[in-house]
Structures are given as C-alpha cells and as structure tokens.
Image 1: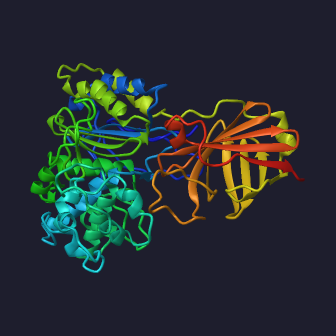
Image 2: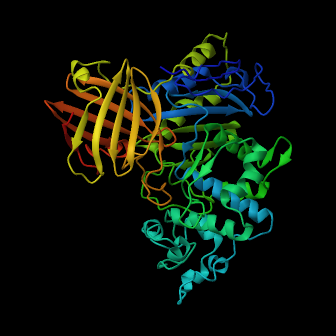
Image 3: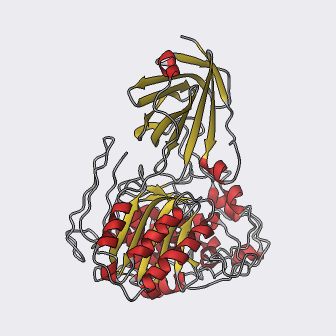
Length: 527
C-alpha cells in the first residue's frame, strides 16, 4: 500500500512508493512555512474541531462518494489534508467544470487590464466567424451573458459546437431562441467562447495568460489544459491541476484578490463574479446548492458560501463567514449529496467556539489522513490458472476496439497485461495487494463525458492499477487514470483455452449501468 503525505500542523511526511519521487515541502510547526509552502496548523489552533473533520471522513466510508483528495484551510493555514492512495499531492487531477471558474478569472484579469468589458458584444471579437445573417439575439449577446450561462442558446449548444473543427464559427452559427441574459441554461461552450475571447484580445491562450498573472504569483505549478482543434483552451472543461492549486486559488478569492501583499485581481471583480447575477430555474428543492444563484462561472451555496465545481465532485468551496476554504477532488454520483455532508459535518466544526484538545484528537486525525486509501479489488493474490496462461498469447476475435492479441505475464505479485492492435503494443502493469504505475494507450480509455478536447488516439494515459483473483478462473483489475476522476474495472474470465475480457467504466457504474459502450472481447489461447 502506498503511503501519502498528510499534514495537520506539525510535519507529517509519508513515503510515496512505486518509483514516484515525493515532492517535499519544508514546514515549521503551527503557523509557519518556509519558502513558498502554505503554513500548516492544527485544527484546534484555528478554532476548528478535529472531531468534526473525523466525522466527515467517517461519513464517506462505504458510501457512494469517492474522494481522491481533501484540503481544508482556516485563516490562511492548512489545517487538514489527505490523499486517498493511490492518489498523491503531486498529481494533476481533471477538473471538468471547475475549469470555468479559472476562465472567468482570466476574463476578470482582462477587464482589469481594460482589454474588454463584460458589456462588449460577443460577435465584435470574431468578425470573420459570424454567420451571413445575424439574428437580433446573436447581435445582443454580451460577454456577461456568456459568464452567467444566459447566452440564449438551448442545451444542445456544447455538443454541436465541439462536433466540428471550428468551434467559434459553430457556436456563433447556432440558433439563439432566447434573449441573452434572460434565461439560465448551463452551456460549457459559452465558457469556451470566453477562452477564445481572452486569446483574441491578449494573443495568449487562457493557460498562458493565467500562468504569468495567476499561477506563478500564487505558486501554482504544472497545470495543463486541453485545447480545441485550433489550439484554443477548452475553457469550460479540460483543466488539470493539483489539489493545492485549487486551495491557493480559493484562498486568493477569500482574500479578495490579494496574495502575499500583492494585488493579483481587483476586489471589485471577485465581488461581482462570486455574487448572484442570475437565478437558476427552481426545479429542485429550494435548499439545494444548485438553486442559490449563479455568478460569473461561480455557484452560490447555502450558508453564505460560494464555489467553483466540476462534474463528479471537483470542488473549491469558499466560506467567507468562516474565513475558510474547502477543496475536494474525487468521483461522486451525487455532488449535492457530497455538499450535504460538508454542511452536516464540516460546517459545525468551524462553529465550535469551545474547543478543549490535548492533542489526542488532532493526532488521531493526522493518522487517519495519513492512511486514507481507495479499496483494492477483492480476491486472492494468485490462482492456479496463472501459471498455465503466463506469457502465453490469446488471439482475439475481431472487435470494434481493434484489439488483436492479449497476453498476461505474472511475476510475484505483479502482472503485466499486453494488448496488441490498432494502437500498437500497449502494456498495463498492475499489482496484487497494491498499485503499479504505467502509461498506455488502450482503445476506449480513459473514460470521459465530453469528446471535445480529448487527446488524439494513441496518446498514452497515466494509469495506476491493482489486480486480484475473486474466483479461480476470474482475474479483475482496476485501472485508475489518476489524472482524471475516472477508472475502469477490467474483468478477465478464463474457460479452458478461451478468455473473455469485459470493461466497466466508472461513469457508467455511477449512472447505474452494468456495462459501458465497449464490447466484451473474446479470444483463444494461441501459444
């Protein structure tokens, strides 16, 4: 099992295994930091109950909400942090729509630099991409309408935009049935247009624009962002960033745009972007966090909070009344359910003003945070069949994935699965009773919910995998694409000289489907 780094106040360093070098921070106890590190402190020293945080962690056990990371700040200090093995602090994580809040911030920086205003008309930026006939609603569409998800288009806008090579032209060519600014209709393509506008007025992609103005000043390193076919960052999705990058971003928002005494972005923009600009249709319960109002690519929450969020539970929650930031990444089938647990367990932890702690509770919390892990596949580490099939090849029947041959190599507690086909030879390594790292371009992986910006076929994905034998003739692997929220369950059933290999991606699993779109592939032992 991998150990992770966890801190709550004093230094607590885990060892990162499987050949991945740890990224180390030099810290001092309770309130200090060296270099660019965020200061760390115990929860109780900042008026927060460790018991409340433990209660939140306990509520996740055995439930539907799979967290990959958690960081909590109070008064600018990290009071709790942990990663569920095999996820690590050093890894970027796919943000889905959490990306939108960063794109909004790029617009805010451009407004501060007087490169544009939120009242500017969208078509004014793209005179060569507008349709021959411009409707009144298209002509009226403003930057502000893109920011508030009220561009006037219908819910099919994103799918139609990313289906062609020129996304800007496709977006501007769509019908605009509603008056811009009048109806909230969630539209990721609208955020892409904001990204295109930033690139148009600055000459830099949103990623490059933010790198010099936001990421470097805040000490955020290594983010990357998917692009459209014309090299424009996707804007509404596709940002991959470390958990601590989200924490620093959230703290900047909490500090109203100031970082280490330097103003990064105007206080006026943050106030405007994070306040209610439009009301969502109240089709859900009135206490749901999705109907508290929407700002400029930020959601209002209950309890005076606001957040950026992304599909399956990528959260940056800012709580001004508590002077706190909560960041979570993971894969949850119910983001509202996850937020409910935050309000049930973590919010009261900030409100506990009578704290008596002799160190035992915070020490217990540190131990729990340092031993978090994703469950491994259930089963034994070996099977009698492994020796018989070791290093032998299965000829696979014709299939839509283009996989032609599969072989298994067992060495101790490790297994290497080699797949040969249209993408050449790909090897996925897994470990029984632990996790093993590799990079491979297996057709149909990794899972994702939007096609736009996807890496080109044949681009290797970073995978950490574990395996087990739940039955004598059944070998199951979990392939975790650790720079995304998602994973695959790969089930190999052996029968005589035959094998069948089935795939179930975590998106399909979260949505209650027993299979995904990929076929079961079948083969016969050939040597």
